Structures are given as C-alpha cells and as structure tokens.
Image (cartoon, rainbow, N blue to C red; front, side, top):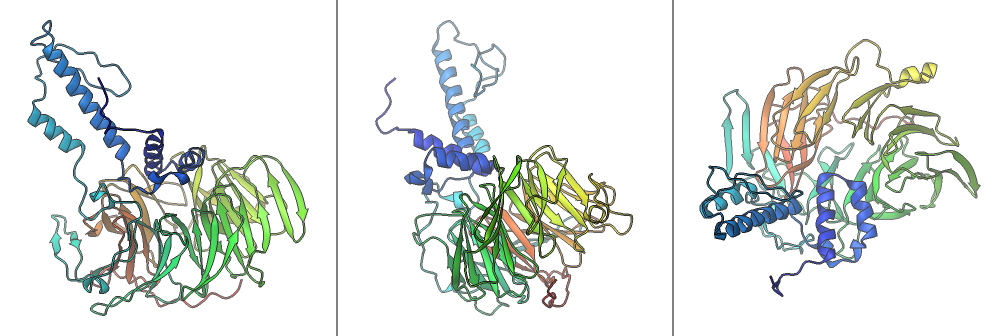
Length: 545
C-alpha cells in the first residue's frame, strides 16, 4: 500500500518520542545518554511540547488500528465469513485469530474504547493543546492575572469520613502565574516567611512575595538562566544560604549560578559537564557543594572574591583512587565515574553523597579518600535525608528500600554496618513512590508505621510541617493531601483541577504550603484558613558551627 506523502515519520521523531517517554518514566540517566548520542539539542523537535505518555498513546492507537485492519480483512475473507475473534492483540507478538462467540467491536464500541484508552487531558494542563510548544511564548498578563487568583469558582465539600475537600481556588488558596512551563521545585526563604523561590522547565527561577489577599500579587523577580528564550533548560536545584542573602541554583546545562536575595546575578560556577542534581550551602555558608550527573562533586570556596575557585573536587563514586595535586586545588580522581544523585552536609567540613553506584560516601575537606562508605543498597541510591540532630541518615533507592544509618554510632565507634538509632523517641521518615503510595517508617526499628493509599496516581513529593504534626503529599493526580501524622487520617484535600503536583514545601513558620504545579502555576495554601497551621516563630539564623 502506498504511503501518503503527507505521512512522514523520521528517526528524529522517534528519538524525541523515546526521549520524552524516558523522561516521564524517570529514566534520567538513559534519557541523558540518548539526548547526547542522538544530538537532540540540535533537533527542532526537542522544543515541541510532548504530552505526558505520548509514546504509549501512539502505540495504543497503532494497536487499535492493527486490530481493526486485521479483523476487517478477515471478515472479507470468504473462508471465514462469520468467524469472530476473541484473541488479544499484543505489540510484541503476532496476532492469531481465534474462533469465539464474542462479537467484534462495532464502530461505536471502538470509539468508546478509544475514549477509555485516551481520556481527554484535564483543562489547564500543558498537554491540553497538543500543538503547543514546549516553550510557550510569553503573553501579556491581563489585569486579572496581576492579582492573586482567589475569586475563581471554588467547590468546598465534606466527605463521608469528615475530610474537608477543596477544589479550585478561593478563600485560603491562591494561584500565582508567571512561569511559562511546568514548575518543578520550590524553597521558602529561611528568614522572610513570605518569600518563595520556584524553579521551572522554562529555565527561570522566580522569587515571589506571597501576598495576603486581597492584596495585589506583585510581578515576581525572574532569574533567567538561558538568554535564548527558545532554549528550554530545566531548573534542577535551588538552595538559600543560612542567612537568606544568597541563593544558588542548578540547571540542566551543568552551570551553578549564584544570585542575591533580590535576584541580581552575581556569578556562574562552571566545571560540570552534565546536569546539576543538587547544590547545597554549607552550614556556615563558606562553601557551596554541587553534585552532577557527570559523576563529580565540587566544593566551591565562597569566602574569596574569586567566583571560580574550587576548594576541592571529588570523584568518589567508583574504582580505586589516586590523588592529583594541581595548583590551589586538590583533585580526587576515580575512574570510571558514577553519576551523583544527591548530597547533604553533615557539618561545615563534611558531606555525604549517593550515586548510581549504590554507595553512600562520607567525604571531608582536605581528605583524599572518603572517610566512610556505606554499602547495602542493591540499586541506585537517589535521595538522602538527615535527622534534625544529624545523628541518623535515611537513604532511598531504586531497589525499593529505605535504609537507615546510625551516624552517631559510626562517629563513636566506626561501625561498619547498617544500624538502627538507639531506643527513644521515633524520628519518622516518609517515602513517596511511583506505586501511588506513601509510607511512614519508624527509624528505630525499620518498621512501617503507616501506609497511605489515598492517591490515585504516582506520588511525587511530600513535606512535614515544622513541628511534625502534619504530613502533606502531592501526586500526579493533581491533589494535595494533608494527614495527621499521629493517626494517619486525612484531614484535608485540595485538588488543583489541572495537571499534577510536582513539589510541595511547608513554610518555615508552618502557616502556608507552597505547591509547584504541572499547569505552570504556583499555588499557596494558607493552612490557617483550614485550621491546620503548625505555627512556629520565624527562626533566627543559626550560629556559625
């Protein structure tokens, strides 16, 4: 059969579809390799907005077409005029018809099946318009968009179990618009309760002065990372220093940028050859740690006036080490490299990192080798969390486990195994998952305290309230759920009604919740209006360690 000249599929189209699928599925390292090997940065298709799950949708459509075509031809076959097929279709296997009693789908039923397989996207989500570009052109804000959105249609209901449910925006919930693409991360200012930094796929970090309705919403300060507006680069990391005077941002282009609290660009820190996965200020704000997909960790000296001064370079996640000394910089060389996925400071001279090599390394400035390596995970370790007193470390891995490490025992006796904290008050640890669940763990004995099964799609994020009374979770189902940590009961549900929830963070004072949305918005939930504030006084800057 001749192919219409209007139908054209190129290898670049396929590569971009696969790349989008890998990104959606969380295969970051594989997508990074494909992007570079297929030279997708030079492809005009990379900037085309790709709805989530587009490859799967296209394959399902192809499968439906194959089914209709095969059965149409079979019905035209004189040898099988009345034979009906009940055998399933598969992408990977050749279809063999069977003679069953089930009738073939009539055209209306095929339409219904298509609607079930490909439900229309929720209005407001980036996939609502399939022709939309990945990087939408900036549009002039209307007068209504200049104010906090609190007057839209809102639905307040109470479930049969007494849970208050809010859909949309109204009293207690405002939507702040400004980003031009999905918003991935956010972090509140450590000392100014109403200042929130958000990072987006549009290559900007925006600094918001969160209003108290009905006060007007001031235009956020945009920290633009890429001069070319058509070149989209994800913002991957945000971190304020302890005083809130500076903010460091990490980007997919491998550059760490440092800005003032007012949004003025100070300088770039260039060394990494891959996306930045984490950047962390040391507790004393004298150093800045950056971790990258290229397998390196860099500690930058932030005390000098030289913005490119590397205090120490670490390559600690593989092989044997051999030290190199060059100029003012001590370099630790390990080959080959394993991508670094997260890092946290233990004190002002010591940090902990994790990698795809399944190891957790503790490194200290001035030391050539890791001073400790924790081994036990069977797959990539992608997240580290320290307890408030820095005596316990929790690590999450693609091996579907959370492991808890007793740092106090290691520091005291050099313990070499995964251990539990001593008996006493539990320090709960919460883990979200793509299996649509959240789980709360008791770090004393490793038991699962609560299994939260209330989301209808992948759970992306969570945040504890400052005093630990409440737990907030966000999901691809577009909902934020607030749980009572003691009982595990849902107290409040908010539905953004358009797209998913990528990140949430409880304000330092415990009064508000910042929410990053797939629909390009940033929502602020005033928990005082819903009786769920976990208020603490604005913290003072901690003393220098």
